[in-house]
Length: 127
Image 1 (cartoon, rainbow, N blue to C red):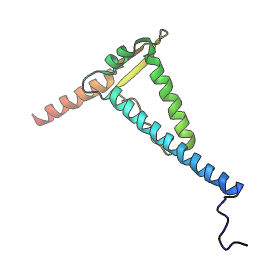
Image 2 (tube, one colour; image 1 turned 135 degrees about the vertical axis):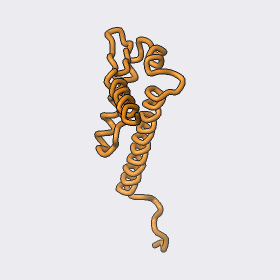
Image 3 (cartoon, one colour; image 1 turned 90 degrees about the vertical axis):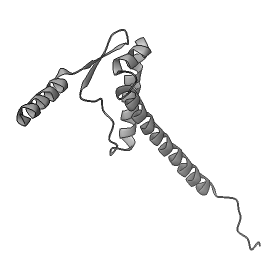
Image 4 (cartoon, rainbow, N blue to C red; image 1 turned 180 degrees about the horizontal axis):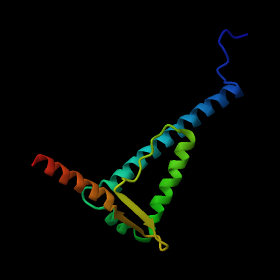
């Protein structure tokens, strides 16, 4: 009889280690997808060098795939982390996915007109 324990793990111990490893990997993938979504949203909607429409035009008929993939990733993340605040399209924009796969993005006039109204009310109150 040996005074040292058998270093060979039991099947249960092996299974537990595998579950922990897989869960760790899955958590990393979720975090990576969150980072991707945030980066994609910032680069697409808040790009200082290109407008969202220019970004969409670069993708051409494949632009719709960005929106479809983003939607799929968001649903997958929400399924495992319902506290995650998904970045949204800025309110000043709306978009339409066209039948040919291109995406048309417009800047909503309501945002601009409400800003104009605020500016004119500020200037009239300062007079």
